[in-house]
Image (cartoon, rainbow, N blue to C red; front, top):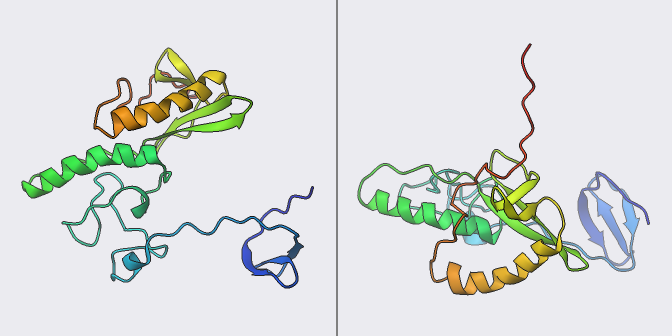
Length: 203
């Protein structure tokens, strides 16, 4: 096995069976599995000023109001907000967006409440999984979730996290979609339960 670092794919030469980088390095292959660039919808790019270079809606990262016009709001994969494009993000965004649409319709100031909160189970195999919880300002940290005492460990694989992911399927269909609140999981990321690095003491 060989690892090729700093390889920016420019094109695929199917006839030669080679992956070619922008600087013309060539890597031969017999089976190529690639993930295309994640981009927004093409119609967003057709509206001047609505999207960025990747066709994601230019969006205020805290209020979720589009930069182009005050009466446009964006959510989920449509936005250019600097957080994970995950279902949990869209869920947390939805509560902020719904409230801000009402504020806009009433002529009230918008609330900058979205902090980039995201959490995700990551299967690691052998009936174990990781769980991460982070936002714009905080990278995934070890600790516990959703409460300070747990029961789920953060940034550490466990069978309990795997069971949590399996249980989440039921929670998704029977709690989240009907609009129920999940206890202990607010819109904004909680600091409790996370092992933040200790600040050095000034001498």
